[in-house]
Amino acid sequence: MVELVPTLLRQELARLAESDQRIDGRAQFEGREVTLETDCLYNAEGSAKVTMGKTIVYAGVKFEIRTPWPDRPAEGSLMCGAELRPVAHRKYEPGPPSPESIELGRVVDRGIRESGCIDMSSLCIVPGEKVWGVMIDIHVLSDGGNIFDACGLAAIAALRTAIVPAERFDVGEDYTLKVNGTPIMASFTRVGGRYIYDPSEEEELGGDERIHITLGDEGHLHSLQKGLRGVFTPAEFAEIFDVAQQRCGELRNIVANQEGN
Amino acid sequence: MMGGYGDVQLLRDDGLRLDGRKIDEMRPVSIEAGILPAADGSAMVTHGLNVAVAAVYGPMEAHPRKIQRQDRAVIDVRYNMAPFSTSDRIRPGYNRRSREISKVTAEALESVVLVERFPRSKIRVEIEILAAEAGTRCAGITAASVALADAGIPMRDFIVGVASGKVEDTVVLDLDKAEDNYGQADLPVGILPNTGEIAFLQMDGDLSPDEYNLAMEYNFKAAAEIHEVMVDALKRRYEGGEN
Image (cartoon, rainbow over all chains, first blue to last red; front, top):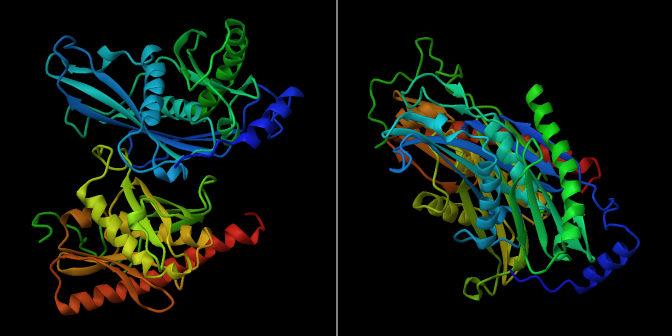
């Protein structure tokens, strides 16, 4: 479905930005309410449901036993994919994975993979013969804006609750997957000429380019992505990077609190 | 023929089933309407361990044009199982099973929706299975009809998805996973609770005419129970005045 150019919406967003306002009343770098629920899917070995405003996503972790890659005989693998299914919004059409859903899955994948939170050698069962393949599938059920952050949060929260189903595969006893760290994504969209954190659906519709920053526990960068048409300055990045550090810390606390319960 | 695993005991010596249910007892069902903010109507059905979510979009312009009908709306259903919904991961994407279920579900829904009210349009129904433990097509149909009602689409009745089957030569209501895998028959139907008509029917396995009649009797009994839960979900959604 082709969205008509939302000219009026863009004008309104620009007018609001001039007086430092957002269309839903939030401050420039204020996020929407976030809820996190884990162990919520019966057949997944790890699972999470995240809501961010009107956005709802689920992530489920599954394991399989596979033969290792020849050049890495003692390492397992991790794969993260996202599906933007037509259930999530009237704008999504059925069919093979769209470039948007591939980008989404890969950006989340990189943040988790590059943070090093999974030691691939810990996924080895028999070197050269059997290793675990870990698959995180993200299902977007409702796109109310900023699905990137919601997907990133659901993916790492699901992974951190995963139980390796060794008994079912006859390779020992079940055990909790070891995850060293909680990489978190923070996303910004240019709306009315300036960057805002956690764009809503309307802000994405009437906004421009977006920047996704994934940070590890120590505040190190693990994944960056600029999407859509537009450019930014180093000074703009410096500003949102500082915000990302704060917001990622807050979301990391939500994951920690959920695990503490 | 289903089954063929004669060594799996599905009925206990006390006559109850492995999960402790009586032979004509349904798994617990709970329903929530209006759970997806982006959709025009939505519902989540938890039926035993199954979780089915349905979203409705439309009526909208029918694309591509060749699917348009001059005299009525078409209902475009997609039934999809999430990769993490089963014990072994499912590769994402459509398969023959989901295509068939989508097709017969669409035809069932077209039998109750007042499609003549919306010529040349399309109503999209998206059914996503988040957890699958036997009975997902029925949970999907139930979810779809609550989502259609939630979207304000006029219908002459609900459709309630229910199934009975046969295990160890005994007709039982609402097969669970083990009973579905090792049982002798499965009879999923979509029942119109107010008119008593049937809009969805599939069956596989082996049933005698008497067994069929008993299975159908169980299905109607269960449909009446689920219907109450459906009505209750919609009342809870709208009695608060929130929309």
